Length: 272
Image 1 (cartoon, rainbow, N blue to C red):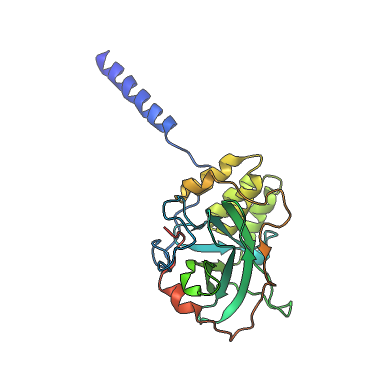
Image 2 (cartoon, one colour):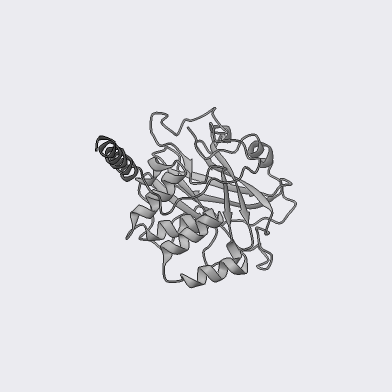
């Protein structure tokens, strides 16, 4: 009787621990290391004149642990995008630059920053300026940097984040599984997460947020971004979240702004 009682007590304790442990229905898996440097300090630490170092969370890119945003892109209806948490800042504008593995610029955009802290989405182009060639070729890895422009007269004071982006092709089997749950966005998000497609996963979680905030919280918590999950997603009541300060430019291959070296020196998703 004593042994049975001890067993029941142990079983109850186990069940209580399991019940207290979070279960993430939308859990993004650990991503394969693609050679990107580990998450760490911002690329630019000279200035920080437009960020209060005491404010937490700081400027952060919403990415999985390997700092690479993978997407199926052309195989789905969800546009490719990058997501950032913008804290309170003295900067009025930011600049997003994307280069290929050779260091050639393929895209650059300047945008106005929001007046209040929160998470923003920056949609990326599907095509080059000629309207035919896809900006992001399947299988190729591209590098981006996102710069808070603290002082337009001295870009050395920019606060930078860096990361990677890659479009891959979805298999016919995956597309069939996706079609089978076409009316269930959470099931779709879980399929994308299991396939390692970060961009579609986070886009669906954000779209569900007004009705199902738990999915957003679960996803970000699974990649150690719980502090961002409780912050507002800006622009959900507007058709466009980012407001360009200048016309986005899709650059032909061959342009080089010298951004590759600073991108390769360290890819980070947080300016802490």
